[in-house]
Image (cartoon, rainbow, N blue to C red; front, side, top):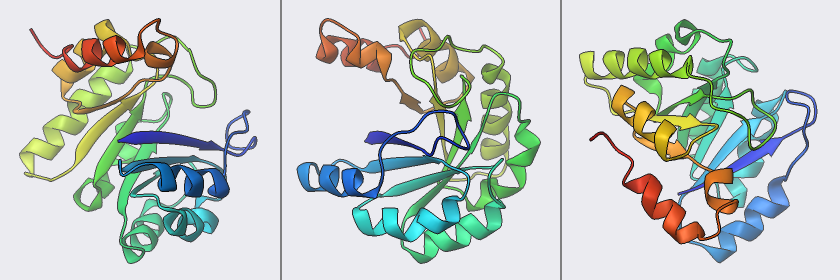
Length: 188
């Protein structure tokens, strides 16, 4: 899938792409578009990003009441993800797990690329994996931020099954080799 960060300069201090770019990307690929809304008012943009071609829409637990977001995204026929930032405990997300397609644990502070991985994300991933397995839920665990072969191995061992890698791929001399290395970075 292709993970697309949408930032509004308010919820996070950076500003990135919007609906027209997602619509253009949709025309270029059949990959699932995983649109991560790091914005203050994500509810306002669920329908526009759905219409633009998003397959998965992820909102931050800190910016919205997750039940409203889940209902709205599912009404659009899309998959729903909820994300938590590093200072946010998993308890904010846990009641939503039964309704989610993806739980996203940020392993950096959202807003800027090429940050150092924050190891405090690992116990969060383990906790979410424990709850998903206990209740036999169909929910992916995604980790975003500071992912490289070493950190990928750690979060996969903790229970993540979807990794977001930006700088490790786009900053590599050989992006395809970097992708292969990340895909092989599972538990030994």
